[in-house]
Length: 186
Image 1 (cartoon, rainbow, N blue to C red):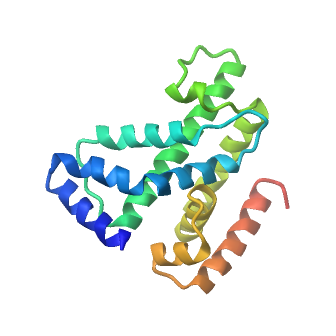
Image 2 (image 1 turned 180 degrees about the horizontal axis):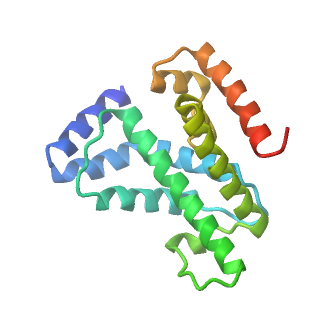
Protein backbone atom coordinates (compact mmCIF):
# COMPACT_ATOMS: atom_id res chain seq x y z
CA UNK A 1 0.00 0.00 0.00
CA UNK A 2 2.88 2.33 0.75
CA UNK A 3 3.95 2.14 -2.91
CA UNK A 4 0.66 3.68 -4.05
CA UNK A 5 0.88 6.46 -1.49
CA UNK A 6 4.49 7.17 -2.50
CA UNK A 7 3.43 7.38 -6.15
CA UNK A 8 0.60 9.79 -5.28
CA UNK A 9 3.00 11.99 -3.31
CA UNK A 10 5.52 11.91 -6.17
CA UNK A 11 2.82 13.23 -8.49
CA UNK A 12 1.97 15.94 -5.94
CA UNK A 13 5.66 16.93 -5.75
CA UNK A 14 5.76 17.05 -9.55
CA UNK A 15 2.73 19.37 -9.50
CA UNK A 16 4.56 21.71 -7.11
CA UNK A 17 2.58 21.08 -3.94
CA UNK A 18 4.81 22.42 -1.17
CA UNK A 19 3.74 20.00 1.56
CA UNK A 20 4.12 16.86 -0.58
CA UNK A 21 7.90 16.54 -0.38
CA UNK A 22 7.96 16.66 3.42
CA UNK A 23 5.10 14.16 3.63
CA UNK A 24 6.93 11.91 1.17
CA UNK A 25 10.13 12.09 3.19
CA UNK A 26 8.26 11.22 6.40
CA UNK A 27 6.61 8.25 4.68
CA UNK A 28 9.88 6.78 3.35
CA UNK A 29 12.15 7.81 6.22
CA UNK A 30 12.45 4.30 7.69
CA UNK A 31 13.30 2.89 4.25
CA UNK A 32 15.94 5.58 3.80
CA UNK A 33 17.51 4.76 7.17
CA UNK A 34 17.59 1.10 6.14
CA UNK A 35 19.33 2.11 2.89
CA UNK A 36 21.85 4.27 4.73
CA UNK A 37 22.56 1.54 7.27
CA UNK A 38 23.05 -0.97 4.45
CA UNK A 39 25.56 1.34 2.78
CA UNK A 40 27.44 2.11 5.96
CA UNK A 41 27.49 -1.55 7.03
CA UNK A 42 29.63 -2.30 3.99
CA UNK A 43 32.50 -0.41 5.61
CA UNK A 44 32.67 -1.67 9.19
CA UNK A 45 34.90 0.18 11.59
CA UNK A 46 35.36 0.53 15.28
CA UNK A 47 34.07 4.09 14.99
CA UNK A 48 30.36 4.82 14.95
CA UNK A 49 28.87 5.67 11.57
CA UNK A 50 25.69 7.71 11.58
CA UNK A 51 22.95 6.72 9.13
CA UNK A 52 20.74 9.60 10.27
CA UNK A 53 23.24 12.19 9.06
CA UNK A 54 23.55 10.40 5.71
CA UNK A 55 19.75 10.32 5.24
CA UNK A 56 19.38 13.99 6.12
CA UNK A 57 22.25 15.03 3.86
CA UNK A 58 20.66 13.08 0.96
CA UNK A 59 17.32 14.73 1.73
CA UNK A 60 18.92 18.18 1.64
CA UNK A 61 20.47 17.44 -1.76
CA UNK A 62 17.04 16.47 -3.13
CA UNK A 63 15.30 19.49 -1.59
CA UNK A 64 17.83 21.79 -3.25
CA UNK A 65 17.07 20.36 -6.70
CA UNK A 66 15.23 22.84 -8.82
CA UNK A 67 13.39 20.23 -10.87
CA UNK A 68 11.81 17.53 -8.75
CA UNK A 69 10.36 14.84 -11.00
CA UNK A 70 10.59 11.16 -10.20
CA UNK A 71 8.73 8.55 -12.20
CA UNK A 72 7.96 6.16 -9.33
CA UNK A 73 9.19 4.75 -6.05
CA UNK A 74 11.98 2.75 -7.73
CA UNK A 75 13.21 5.84 -9.58
CA UNK A 76 13.25 7.89 -6.37
CA UNK A 77 15.03 5.18 -4.38
CA UNK A 78 17.54 4.65 -7.17
CA UNK A 79 18.30 8.37 -7.12
CA UNK A 80 18.56 8.42 -3.32
CA UNK A 81 20.89 5.44 -3.48
CA UNK A 82 23.16 7.27 -5.90
CA UNK A 83 23.05 10.43 -3.76
CA UNK A 84 24.02 8.47 -0.62
CA UNK A 85 26.74 6.65 -2.52
CA UNK A 86 28.12 9.97 -3.83
CA UNK A 87 28.08 11.43 -0.31
CA UNK A 88 30.08 8.48 1.02
CA UNK A 89 32.49 8.65 -1.93
CA UNK A 90 32.92 12.41 -1.51
CA UNK A 91 33.62 11.91 2.17
CA UNK A 92 36.16 9.17 1.36
CA UNK A 93 37.86 11.42 -1.23
CA UNK A 94 38.07 14.27 1.25
CA UNK A 95 39.34 11.95 3.97
CA UNK A 96 42.00 10.65 1.59
CA UNK A 97 42.96 14.21 0.54
CA UNK A 98 43.28 15.27 4.18
CA UNK A 99 45.60 12.33 4.86
CA UNK A 100 47.75 13.51 1.96
CA UNK A 101 47.85 17.03 3.41
CA UNK A 102 45.11 18.55 1.25
CA UNK A 103 43.32 21.52 2.69
CA UNK A 104 39.83 20.34 1.77
CA UNK A 105 36.93 21.71 3.80
CA UNK A 106 35.13 18.97 5.72
CA UNK A 107 31.60 17.91 4.83
CA UNK A 108 28.85 18.35 7.39
CA UNK A 109 28.98 14.57 7.65
CA UNK A 110 32.55 14.66 8.99
CA UNK A 111 31.32 14.57 12.53
CA UNK A 112 29.13 11.56 11.83
CA UNK A 113 31.22 9.43 9.46
CA UNK A 114 34.64 8.26 10.55
CA UNK A 115 36.52 6.15 8.02
CA UNK A 116 40.05 5.02 8.50
CA UNK A 117 42.43 5.77 5.63
CA UNK A 118 42.20 2.12 4.53
CA UNK A 119 38.41 2.27 4.51
CA UNK A 120 38.43 5.50 2.52
CA UNK A 121 40.66 3.83 -0.08
CA UNK A 122 38.36 0.76 -0.09
CA UNK A 123 35.30 2.94 -0.72
CA UNK A 124 37.05 4.73 -3.58
CA UNK A 125 38.28 1.46 -5.11
CA UNK A 126 34.78 -0.02 -4.94
CA UNK A 127 33.27 3.09 -6.51
CA UNK A 128 35.80 2.99 -9.37
CA UNK A 129 35.21 -0.73 -9.93
CA UNK A 130 31.44 -0.26 -9.84
CA UNK A 131 31.71 2.57 -12.36
CA UNK A 132 33.70 0.29 -14.69
CA UNK A 133 31.19 -2.54 -14.16
CA UNK A 134 28.30 -0.22 -15.05
CA UNK A 135 30.12 0.82 -18.23
CA UNK A 136 30.64 -2.87 -19.06
CA UNK A 137 27.05 -3.89 -18.22
CA UNK A 138 24.65 -1.28 -16.86
CA UNK A 139 22.21 -3.80 -15.40
CA UNK A 140 24.95 -5.62 -13.48
CA UNK A 141 26.01 -2.29 -12.03
CA UNK A 142 22.43 -1.52 -10.99
CA UNK A 143 22.06 -4.94 -9.34
CA UNK A 144 25.21 -4.35 -7.29
CA UNK A 145 24.22 -0.80 -6.39
CA UNK A 146 20.72 -1.79 -5.29
CA UNK A 147 21.97 -4.74 -3.26
CA UNK A 148 25.22 -3.40 -1.88
CA UNK A 149 24.39 0.26 -1.37
CA UNK A 150 20.62 0.21 -0.92
CA UNK A 151 20.30 -3.14 0.82
CA UNK A 152 17.43 -4.43 -1.31
CA UNK A 153 16.70 -8.15 -1.40
CA UNK A 154 16.99 -10.03 -4.67
CA UNK A 155 13.21 -10.05 -4.95
CA UNK A 156 13.05 -6.27 -4.44
CA UNK A 157 15.81 -5.74 -7.00
CA UNK A 158 13.88 -7.83 -9.50
CA UNK A 159 10.79 -5.69 -8.94
CA UNK A 160 12.77 -2.46 -9.20
CA UNK A 161 14.48 -3.49 -12.44
CA UNK A 162 11.50 -5.41 -13.83
CA UNK A 163 13.46 -8.66 -14.12
CA UNK A 164 13.00 -12.07 -12.52
CA UNK A 165 14.52 -12.95 -9.18
CA UNK A 166 16.39 -15.74 -10.95
CA UNK A 167 17.96 -13.20 -13.31
CA UNK A 168 18.93 -11.05 -10.33
CA UNK A 169 20.65 -14.06 -8.70
CA UNK A 170 22.55 -14.78 -11.91
CA UNK A 171 23.49 -11.12 -12.36
CA UNK A 172 24.60 -10.82 -8.72
CA UNK A 173 26.84 -13.88 -9.07
CA UNK A 174 28.35 -12.57 -12.32
CA UNK A 175 28.82 -9.04 -10.92
CA UNK A 176 30.50 -10.32 -7.75
CA UNK A 177 32.93 -12.40 -9.80
CA UNK A 178 33.64 -9.44 -12.09
CA UNK A 179 34.22 -7.07 -9.16
CA UNK A 180 36.41 -9.58 -7.33
CA UNK A 181 38.59 -9.94 -10.38
CA UNK A 182 38.64 -6.20 -11.01
CA UNK A 183 39.55 -5.38 -7.41
CA UNK A 184 42.14 -8.15 -7.21
CA UNK A 185 40.34 -10.14 -4.53
CA UNK A 186 39.57 -13.19 -6.69
